[in-house]
Length: 346
Image (cartoon, rainbow, N blue to C red; front, side, top):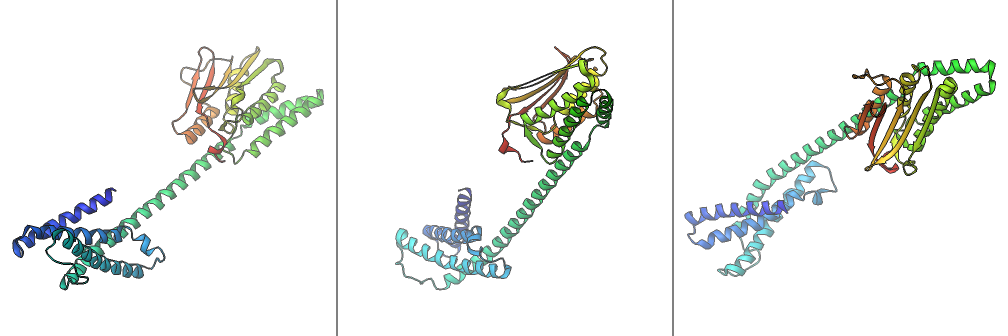
């Protein structure tokens, strides 16, 4: 609509200018100005329609010369048809002459010349602008693809950072159990195998269900229970309505590992880890708490915390919250928007 109004006003102004010129130099009748405005609007509107809607006339070919020939022929037709419409309106509204088909004489030649002189540069300009916009769109699409590839690559790097300290401790625990309790050693091997299956199966998955994430940390904590025995107690509480909600894969395991390393290992006495996943105001809130030493005033930020922060930043930009707090108890709190399975594809 804006383009139609703009085109109409431009045609009116051109007709007004040309009519005023003829009024003072050739035909000093006020109706002359009106006649030229009508003629300009009729021819200019058709000419602009041809230029701005050119895709409907040239969709069947990409040959530049053929497209130009088609536009030139249409501009000529616009001049002729537009002038005939102007004659009809003049005869109907002004009534100073009867309408006769193809009775314009030299007026047609002048109209064709004006249509070509004005229309061809317009067409070339619009084609250039359209081509530039297409190139910009393609470049933006390529940049988006590169950004997505960069994000995927960085996520893969984060997934690849398996803590060798964890593997060393599990292997030592297995070695110690083989001689004194082979059954427990076998259970631990099965748990470790299950944990690695999670890693392999989710290697290309960016998001998975809350239930899967909880299964991962349950497996991890069960392995750590073999190592710490009575020194470790853990509780996991999940809102049943969130089981099938989507969260970033392996988002909680590094935090649980961090709680083991900095909360349970330094304590000679019993240690407790609590994991909660709950809904608050349309957000999925994940809390990892332990009763170990408090976070320092200025957290040093181990690898696990950095991995989680980087992943959240990559996936959510700034649309998430990540908090370390010692009040009312030591805990890490993550809050992200609830998402459904179809919103993400790993």
